[in-house]
Length: 128
Image 1 (cartoon, rainbow, N blue to C red):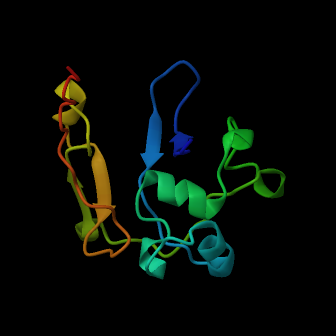
Image 2: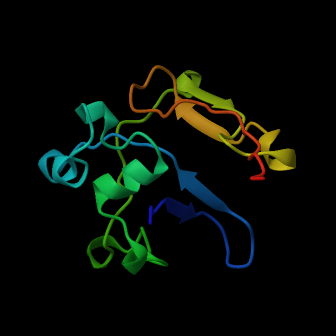
């Protein structure tokens, strides 16, 4: 089973989750390499939602964990180097069909080598 990582950004009962699609491992690179032995390079360690979760050691035990709980949380969202607004790009969500795939709700940093590529939704073929 592959795991992915979502951050809830709003009040309970309101749709406000953000799927983390990729990232750059800035600490614990050796541990991430052990978890992702199939990665061909460090930039591929966390390129894609399941790869990101694997590199970070995310599993179901973290369901509902508070990313803002500090040392009591299994992970934490830290403040890094601010990204200039003109470096932020947006476009359609990867692999999403219908109404949800029309909106530019996918965000990334321009020219970042760790960003997973866009893939349009491909309808599944029915088995006959």
